[in-house]
Length: 79
View 1 (cartoon, rainbow, N blue to C red):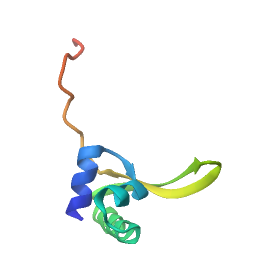
View 2: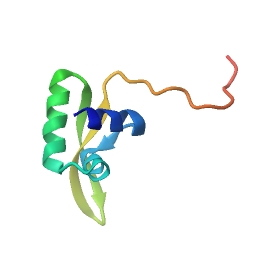
View 3: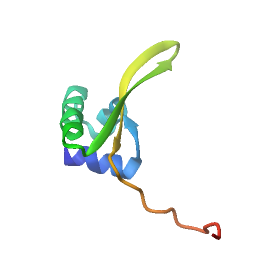
């Protein structure tokens, strides 16, 4: 589960399909881990239906709960 949390912190919100492909963990294990993390309040999940070649792909969109990524380097607008 820590591997999934680290991946989400580094890459932002991702579909469970993308998490499984990137981490090498099976989709069933990713979904089980995400359910446990969601129950603990570590991640937020929502159902997402996207279309690929006209066919619906039903997946879960996952993001870390309450995590704000660090600001990007470079110039910032003045207040």
